[in-house]
Length: 417
Image 1 (tube, rainbow, N blue to C red):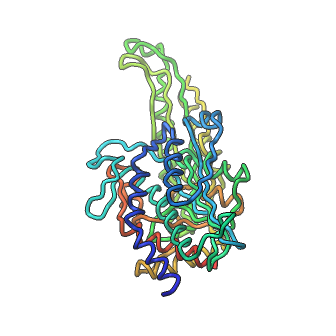
Image 2 (image 1 turned 120 degrees about the vertical axis):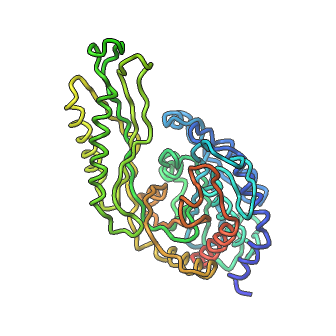
């Protein structure tokens, strides 16, 4: 039996255990906001301890967490040393958007129906807490523990690190960004949570702004005594949406990424139906293709807002940057990781596994900024839409979990052989 077959056999033999592990992770909510996620980290660490894996707990200082509008973050690192060699880190995030409405399954139940596991974060990305943990355990099974320092005597060398973090929904700066800045890790390769049918090698950047439009409140019976902030906001939004249509003519050369786009995801304002609104606040999300320069993009958006506001007498605008996430560019140094994922993905799934970019933005950019070659691959469907991620009835096909775990385990074997 080859080492690949041994890994596959171990994963098959322990798949029920992997499923129970994922169910336990889904059953502890990590809605962000509010972002009280330290309890999930503690539960994860306890489950890992049951597998003989020691999870280092790295709590982020409370003042930094609260400044981000969250409540608690404890990031985890598991380090398994097999001897001299490279360090390969596997990162998945536990935080997730609240479930919202429309569910037909308990979002925290981890219910399995017709070969699918339902629950918030089942696909994005607690699934890869499971795939990465059990890929590491499969790799351990090829060797024997060495008494003393936790090293496993094995046909492979090097170190595998599991990075389980809790700030992806708010930009990752207090997740992987914090671990890297604190000098707690510096891997040679990084694999991050993704889906099973393609390897992602680039992604969009993202600019998020909060725009506050100020007018002057007045009684609706005498509107001329006020300045309608909502009318000002409408003018600004019309200008932004016109700009958004123009973005369709700007195309990326990265496969899987098309053109820039802008979305206004939240609007609030006014005090009552019979009051001219004196303040309106909206938040926008501007996705940047890898070819764009973030500083130029932000300057352009601010200019469009300022020019539209200037055409509305009495309107005043404040703009606050919420997030600036740079795009992740393709990196030739990640070739050994990418090639191994593609080769084993095709062997396990029985179809070619292409490389592509994605219009999402992820925590991978933080590792890339630190000089770490990276790729995105994990357990999940062909598209975000198919998984219902960030929508009701998010789910994971269990066979994708099983097979992706095998691909990751085989890839780790290659990189550390």
